[in-house]
Image 1 (cartoon, rainbow, N blue to C red):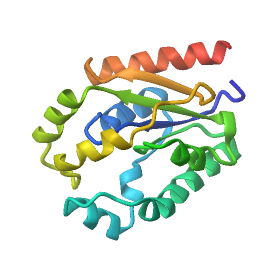
Image 2: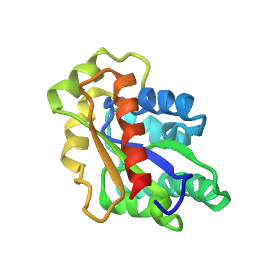
Image 3: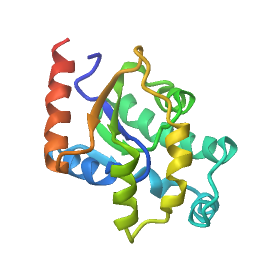
Image 4: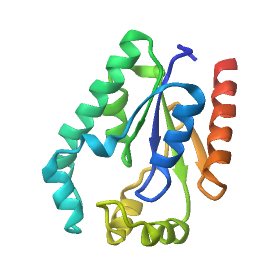
Length: 174
């Protein structure tokens, strides 16, 4: 790894557990945490809450804001964790621009049925479960040239976080 202080982008579709896992990781590692959803402009939140999928034009400014947060941390050599769906390769390219190998994508992957069940049980989020199919069809797999860890969302969040930490240690050894 080029740095012992990476920024992790906890990614996946809505309902995959990004916020929960990121919170556990940030506590365990004592790293800064930024909730990507909090960086959305109000217009994006209103659009998603109404059941309307975001367009790429809606997403670019939001992705640039997240990329700025990432560059601020990598530029100072400070580790961090940020949540972001990062569904497309082009979005991930924006997120790692200027930070290169100091960004590790952590994809929380799961089946549509498992994630749909989570979304339907969730009551405190603006993203309706009706947008899950749009997100699942938009999701592009991690490329072989992307620094990434893929973890199944089936186990409990603390176990997922422990697996991620173990994978980070393996990346450090390379």
